Length: 99
Image (cartoon, rainbow, N blue to C red; front, side, top):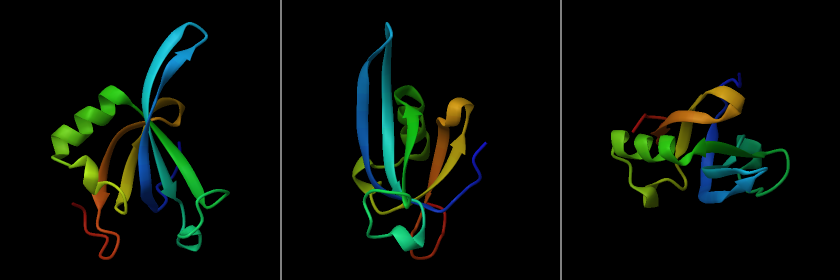
């Protein structure tokens, strides 16, 4: 299980396809994983966080988040099996206050 690092969302992309006969539909958060990497968009200071589309949609609805508001926010992930997110909350990057 991953420990909660400070992740700041750069963007979120859709990842759909078929792998060995199984369809998948995920959302992938591209995040800065440290203050040092704030202006780096590849390498060890960034991280991709994966989430099943159904879980992503449920989290967005249940927390009343706007998709357009995700970039720039801190994400507080809840990790499940295989390092997939099962839920998340957002926080303000300046104050750290949960939104």
